[in-house]
Length: 309
Image (cartoon, rainbow, N blue to C red; front, side):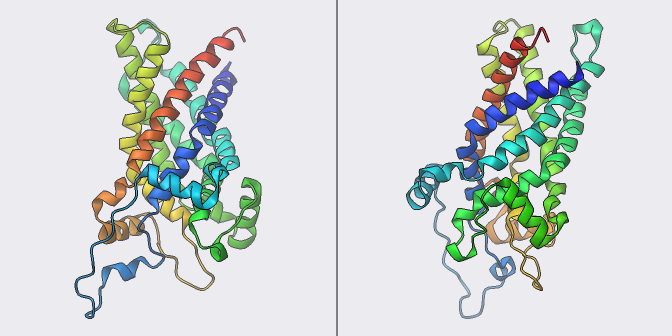
């Protein structure tokens, strides 16, 4: 009975992840806009250039997507999709299954099987943290594969698949590289899971309790889109830092561009301003909304199919 939640969550997560992968790819490319491989140089203009020219406006998600297709081809929209599948199988299956287990254990049978928002958030934080720790290797591989096309050809890693990426990372950078940025991944996953799963349940219960809609597709779409927006707002700053830390290139004998998450956050804000932490927000919400809708609509349908098992 306990494994059923993992199977249902895993199927729904893989479907949602593959459906929205191009939007996730565009989000990663936008989050890396403005980044320099030597961030410290951005903070100390020379006397010869006391007033550097204002930066050119950054292209939006549509322009980024069009440029990506023009330069790398249509199939580039699915760069790193094998890592997405593995990530969903590891990370999302774990968090969805654990959340379902916690919800069943902590629900009050006297109130129709519901539980207060505080417990939903607690279940999401715990499930998300564990899921992220399990799925971090696939997350690092996915970010690198999605970002590879923006590098000059000579600097590209050219991973053939997620397994090739993980194998080469272990060989060239050590096994610990698979958990690079894991603190950020765990923090982000805790925020996303708590905001996404808890708010979906809360919005759905509120809609049904107030009689605004019946339990069906309309309720599932409305509650899931609202949950996606909440998750995007909560997680975007951590997501930007996570993307940059995971994607950084560490040359042998050279200092890493960022010493950690806090260093990355400070350099990003100092060089690009505080709103840099919300880079990629439009594709984040554009991706998070459909992802959450597909995730929960698929999950509800899978639950119906497997209800007798």
